[in-house]
Image (cartoon, rainbow, N blue to C red; front, top):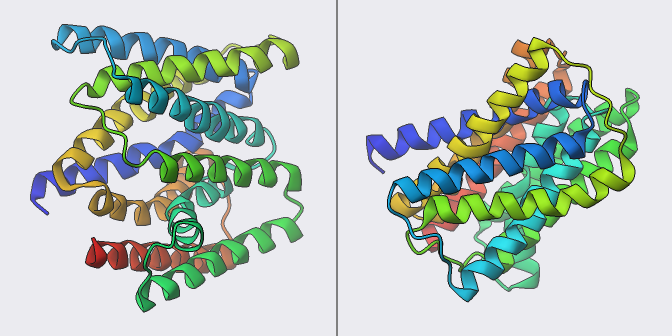
Length: 289
């Protein structure tokens, strides 16, 4: 893995982890599904405009259309939509920790349902990672965190796990920004329906809300997705996924720094265990790929 790939992986991890903090700011002042649908609409249009300027053809194959639509549903609408709703009552740090368990779920379900090989190191990583998640969730639930919000976060990460496993063979075919743009537009369309039916368009405008929305739009929304595609193309999906082990720590650290969210001893222990578990699982998958 070269220096450029390491830099890209670190940049992706920071941008991805920061999304939960900016989302927490947004949902405190605006309807979550409406805000997210609008974000995806704007991000998608920007991505397609940039793609056209870069010479990409705004055309996809049948396989790409199917994969893009399903990722738009599972990642943008279900995964992020449920997280945005949940973060009205769940702290950004906890949402980030649950979302960070994605590599563990992908490895577990791949092992059980798709008969993928799993080394002893991978099994130990799975056990340790889920023990860390359970430790934090148990501590937070006993401390009075909203169980419904936690459940929404878990359903969201499971939806993205399913999409990741089913569509892992889909390729962007070189049209990276085109795929990203259409994926976001699909997500916007899927979210618009429940937003109109279930939410009241009441917004508390402020410079903080505007800054958080703009940041979420450009950095986790566009830049992180683009960097991820480039990283996967450069070093492959399995090696790129290794950087996910940083997400629990970064998600918690950014939430503490920006929002002042408190962390207990069990939280720190749990984060360390999850990071070690994710790293073990990803290293195990690298050896088998």
